[in-house]
Amino acid sequence: MSNDTQKQESQEFQEKDNEAQKFSWTGLETPIKVNRTSHLGSNRKLLTNTKSTSTSPLLSSLRFHLRTLWLFTVSEHSTIVYPWTAFGIFSALAGPALTTNEAPVLWEILFRFPQTLLWMWMNILAFTISNQRLPNSVLEDSVNKPWRPLPSGRITQLQARRLLLAVLPATFFLNMSLGGFEVTLIALVLTWMYNDLGGADENYIVRNLINSCGLVSWSAGTTLVACGNSKYALNTMGYKWLAIEAAIIFTTLHVQDLRDQEGDRVRDRKTAPIVWGDAATRWTIAVPVMIWSLLCPMIWNLGVTGFLVPLLPGGTLAFRVMLLRTVAADKITWKLWGIWIASLFVLPLISSPSVLYALNSTRGDLRFPHVLTNSSFEQGLLF
Image (cartoon, rainbow, N blue to C red; front, side, top):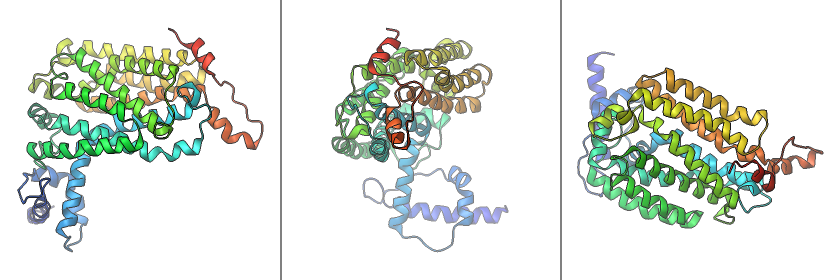
C-alpha cells in the first residue's frame, strides 16, 4: 500500500473518529484521545472496504461507544462469560442433581440462554470497568493490552468512572428482573475488595481467593437465571458443587498470570509467577489440573466417557503449561483453561441426563446407561 493511500486512510479515519468523539459519555463535546496508529492497524481492511458515503454523527457515536463497551469485556468472553453462562445452563438442565427443580424442561431452559448470557455479560462489564479505570490497571494494560479503551485513548478515567455510575444501577435493575440479585451484591463487594482495596495486587493467595469466591457467586447467579428468575434454588448438592468449583478455581486460576508477567512487574503486582518464578508456578498449575480432571468424574461417579470429557482438554492444558512457555502460547493456554473449566461444568448433566431422556421418551424406550439420583451422587462424593 502506498504512502499516499495510507495518509488518505488516516485522514478519513480521523475525520470519522472526530465525529464520534463529539458525543462523549458525559454528553459534552470533549475530545477523546485515540491511538490512531493502533486503530489503523486493526481496521485497515475495514477502511479499504468502506464506501465513501457519509454516516450520521449519531450513528457514528453509537458505533464508537458500543465498540468501547465491547473492548472492556472482550478479553473475558472465552474464559469467563461463555464458560459461566454454560455453568448456569448445564446446572439448570441437570435438575435434581443440583437444583430443586425435579423435572427440568429442555426447551424452557434453552430459551433462557440469551437472558443468562446477558446477565453474565452485564456483571462482567461492571467488573471490567471497575478494574480497568484504576491508574495501575491503565499502566499494566499499556504493556499487556494496549488496545483496551483507556490505554488506547478511546475513553478517559473520568469518563470510565461516570460510565461505571451508569452501568451499576443498570446491572442492579437487570438482576432484579432476571434473578440472582443477592449473589450480584456479593460479587460487587468482592469486586470492591479486588480492585479498590488492592486485593489483586498484594498477595497471590488473596487474589485467587477473591477470584474464586467471585466466580462462584456468578455460577450461582447464572444457575438461578437459567432456572427461571430464581423460580428454583440450588439444593444441598448444588452448594457442595459450588464449593468444589471454588477449590478448582483457587488452585488453577493463576494460569491467567503467566501471560501478563511483564505488565504485572510494571505495576508491582505480586502474582504467583513473580513470587515463585515462572517454572515453579507452571507445576502448581499443571498438577492440580490433572488431579481435578480425574477427581471430578469420580465425584460424579461417571464411567469411562465421563472421564474423557475433562481429561482431554485437561491433559492438553497441562501439556501446554509445561512445554509451551512463550507469551503468545500462554495467551492461548489461558483460553484453553476456559474450555477445560466448562468441561467440568457439564459433568453434573452427564451424570443426570433425565431432561434429555424426557425429550426422547416419546420416540421409544430410550434408556441411558447411567443416570444418577441425589442418593447416588452422595455416594460418589469424596467428602
